[in-house]
Length: 333
Image (cartoon, rainbow, N blue to C red; front, side, top):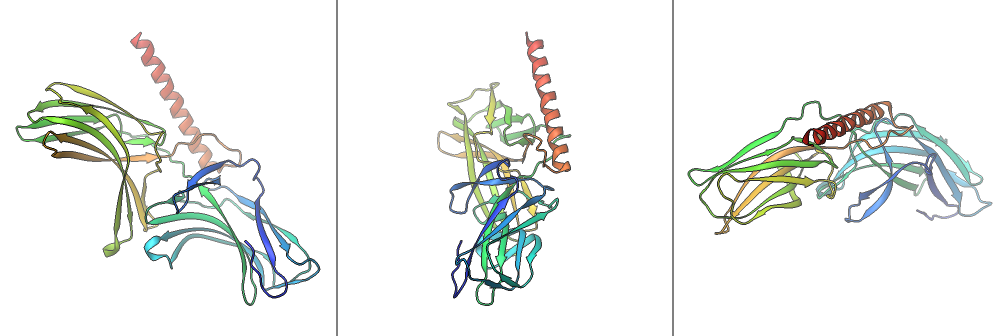
């Protein structure tokens, strides 16, 4: 980004110290496209260099101070004038004076708290970014650099199954069961549906994953429902006593962890929606909330101690799960 003014001007470039080795991930932008950004976790240090390149060599650049900020903020699209900052850190790089030539400044934000996951939704955006500023009398020169933050969770010590019933008196009685209520983003939803009484002609049944984004408070609450996935269970009429298995793989869908009351500004929740349609096009449905969480992949050397422990716990639980699956196969043989 370049800003021109009378006399001298400068270009700003922000470079992370570990840019060559740090992982990048895709993240949706406000216009619906996807870009790649450097990935950080809660508690990790953010450090690097700010390179200032003078546009006109030989001319000095007068300034009122040079600084870099690390900011975490929430922007509600219906209230774009107000940015709600939940993290705001500042490092002064230079006092007011003159820059006689192009210069590089080091910066370091130690063990930065990043409590929430980066998120771009229908009505809200949560972002983290670095902003370098050369303060001047007439117009400041600024450069921003976005990063993405993923939150690792420690679910689930207690993960009970979901059992529910759908019934219409003397017409329909269905029980359905899902193996658990909390799923990581690459998990598989396993379940069964039992038809105990069927006296109406059902022609179609599906399970939808619904994402519900809630923004605002009080009278200014907005709800946006988005159907993330549709999974057809059956196409045709079931009979009494029939049971149908369900296996829904989450890895292929664009999902985020469940977010509840983030900084008292917004929430993102997920629901399993069982839909039945009869031959007269009447719809019957039952909805159940599930919790989604992010599972750690690899323990990074630079990851915070808390994130490392969380990731190790996940690896331990996944290895235990693999052993249980292997044992089940042996038992089956």
